[in-house]
Length: 220
Image 1 (tube, rainbow, N blue to C red):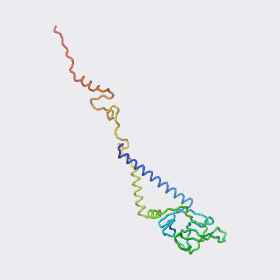
Image 2 (cartoon, rainbow, N blue to C red):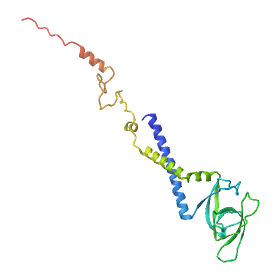
Image 3 (cartoon, one colour):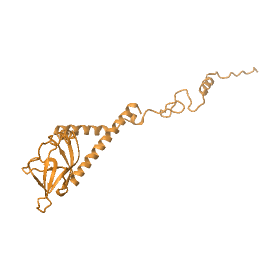
Image 4 (cartoon, rainbow, N blue to C red):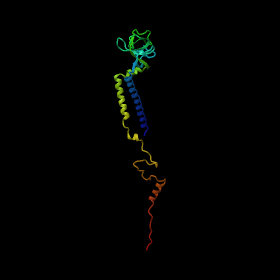
């Protein structure tokens, strides 16, 4: 096997490993979202900086309202509709409705004042982990053009990885026989005897070049 073919094989294996990891993560996230209701929160403003600056992303899990405590970062809907708000809980109160609802006072970490709206919820999405700049990547990947490019690249890589390699590259170079003759259909170079001892060929040639013995007959 040539050095180039070995390098190509390593690249193919690396591509397979990366594709396997990405595919496994995508399947895992799909299952968590479907079965447990996990969601991805994108921070498009800096109201939660410096903990979650603009462009950050976080994973949130659904919890009952009676599990929410001050200090939690939660995502709740606005009464007027529109995009939900993700801020830190300042206080939690029981409105006494008996349905497990809670009244939440929220405030952005970078805001000077608390939110004017009082949020009454029976459940909310609580942030469990987040990372900066990931939101930019998620937003970019969600663009139709980006998805089209990624689909094309993945398809091309898949074809390249599983494309059958040349037989010479797969099997490698012809092996060398122990007596120095290249294995080529079991034939050895002309003038040599496979498996013969050193010097045997020359001796055989010398014997073949000697003239036949002359026979002299006596006259009768």
